[in-house]
Length: 168
Image (cartoon, rainbow, N blue to C red; front, side, top):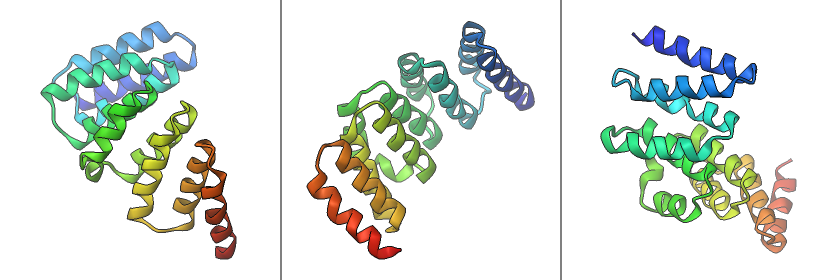
């Protein structure tokens, strides 16, 4: 029952807030085993793995899930957990393979920010360029500039920042 599944996710979130991470993680793993758990519910669990700082465990789980389920939601969760687990080459290869087409912008933004947080700016730059290719706006220019700064390439970031100044 989908409502029961959502309630379990809410319960897991509550246990995280109460700092009872073992119970929260057990609930997540139980949800992942149910074949009736919708792909989107499984994908939504990435936030919980990030909050619990159990990125590697989340990555291993989504690696297993994607072998038996094939959907954009599962792929998005997989690549986000791979990013959070600092699997730079794997993520870059995945993005270059054409899979990026199935990932919504919201998830790409998650990958972008997680990659900056985990200090893998090559992934951030790749994702920023994908976002820019989709929508050539000032936010996307800012993302590229920020990624260049994280890569210690101020000479590439500065012209972009000057361009942004012209947008205002």
